[in-house]
Amino acid sequence: MSKAYDIFLTNLDKMVKWAENRSLWPLSFGLSCCAIEMMHAAASRIDLDRYGCLFRSSPRQADLLIVSGTVTYKMVDLLKNLYEQMLEPRRVIAMGSCAISGGLYCDSPFVVQGVDKIIPVDVCLIGCPPRPEELARAIIEMKNI
Image 1: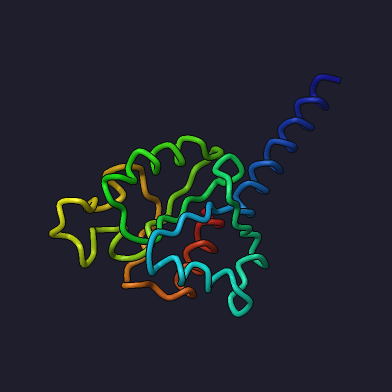
Image 2 (image 1 turned 30 degrees about the vertical axis):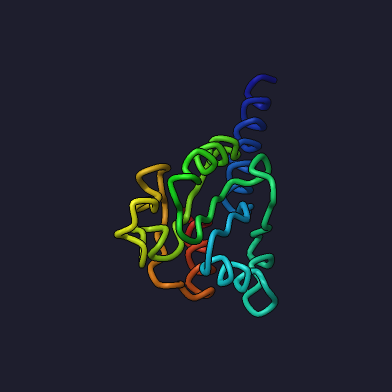
């Protein structure tokens, strides 16, 4: 009886992990012009919903954080707080040159020179702003990791 129970729990655990990897729920956290490209990726032409990617407005329901835009030092505490409230396993995409390295505002003392200095980043999308197709491709690749 115990062997059948162990097999059932093992298969259930594999199924839950498979489902977690195949459906990403990103937190809608847009800061500047890259957020418009993120919204475009969720619209009807690319439609991230068909890939199992449903945008959430609460960090307690999200497992993917897409930082799209310029992060200032005033936003650092909020960004850390949102990241800590997200579900495990947490994933982060830094979208655009402003999120990756400060972008056009790299000389400003108020802009963070890369989100990876605050929270761990899994994927960086280069560009100013990156195309919505690139965001869709990155999300599809993250599902296969």
